[in-house]
Length: 153
Image (cartoon, rainbow, N blue to C red; front, side, top):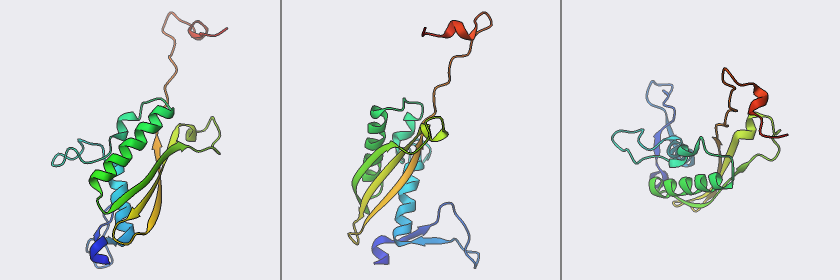
């Protein structure tokens, strides 16, 4: 089964106790490969400019259902293209319902991925955070006051 799933360098790269490159095997190698696809921005690798996940183009997007849907689409299509050892079963993107609204977690979406290993048929899950940068309130100019920027009563 190791030949079907394989082994590869750990990410980030580390040395083993003998001074060689530490390898990860089996399910851990595939999970790290998935995370690598999701963390790579297309264009980041000069020799493979299409590699990665386009979801990072949405980092300044609004925190709404349309952004979540686009992230789910980008995650699914990038994994279907770049990780042939898995079958993507589902990709759900949402917020943490238990987070306090004023916390940093309020600007975090969670990608909940369910996939099947083609070599074994085993179903696995992975959750990855996706951070959306919140808009900054407009600062008053030199001739404005903060109250003049208010749009409400």
